[in-house]
Amino acid sequence: MRHLETALELDDSRVFSDYAVWLNGILNTYGMETRTLTDNFRYLQQSLSTVDELDEPTKRAFGQYLTDAINRLEADQD
Image (cartoon, rainbow, N blue to C red; front, side, top):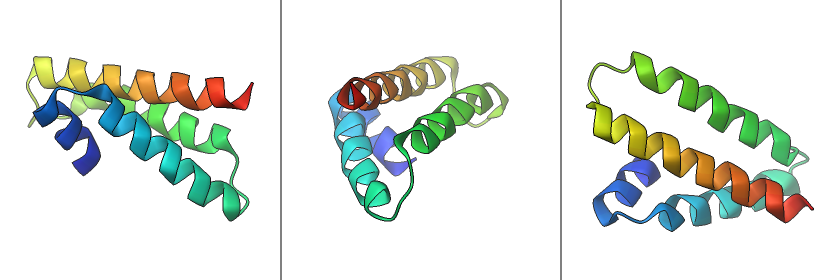
């Protein structure tokens, strides 16, 4: 969540997607598949609507940053 918040503060989706690529590399080293991470990002996207502490523009931005990270991770798999 901190990386999503930083991306929002900087208005730069790449901050989060760079983090996602780095995290994926670490997790792959320990045998976790990229799909596990992208699935978790999708679950996080779905749960954003239930977070009362976030306003709608923030929820939309976080959702977009997660989508961008998912797309980047999946593109790296091709």
